[in-house]
Image (tube, rainbow over the protein chains, first blue to last red):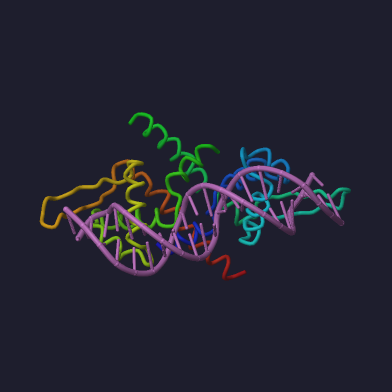
Length: 103
Length: 103
DNA sequence: CAGGATCCTATACGATACTG
DNA sequence: CAGTATCGTATAGGATCCTG
């Protein structure tokens, strides 16, 4: 039970899983790209979520010294282990929507 | 991506998964029992979470006409389909904790 | 481009007291 | 027992503007 909470401590918030999914799907992804991928997210929140994900070692931030700088986000090996959960959540979400619509 | 969000819409909040886990583990569970199972939850929040879970058809509320009334909560068939996800989250939480501790 | 700073609102959550 | 009502605080999140 505590273990489940440990997971949720990392995945909480409105956008965290969407951010991970975006990076995961594209392998590498830039700030502005993720901003476009996720409908409704603000730069403030994206910045905040990315920072938290990095602290939790789920994503890696790479800076290239271009002008202006280029920043790429990618999943760490540890972050990649979330794929199963994300897929499960996706499958269950589809099931659930069907269930709710059917009544 | 939308599907993942559909799942999170149902599982959001500080206690939802803990409540489901409590009921799931015991098969049937009463209000005061869940209150004791989950460390830190208030009756107000438990009431709120149970109501939302019932609206989303994940749990079933059964009232027995004793004096005072007895109320039992159990998972619906649909609620039971969450077991996989909860187990995944549990396993991942353990992995993650290990990772964080190791550095 | 990749954010940071600021301000503001909404909601989540907690504590406590009360009721059929 | 199984909640509801009320109140107060904290945090999440949104909008906008600014900067190296």
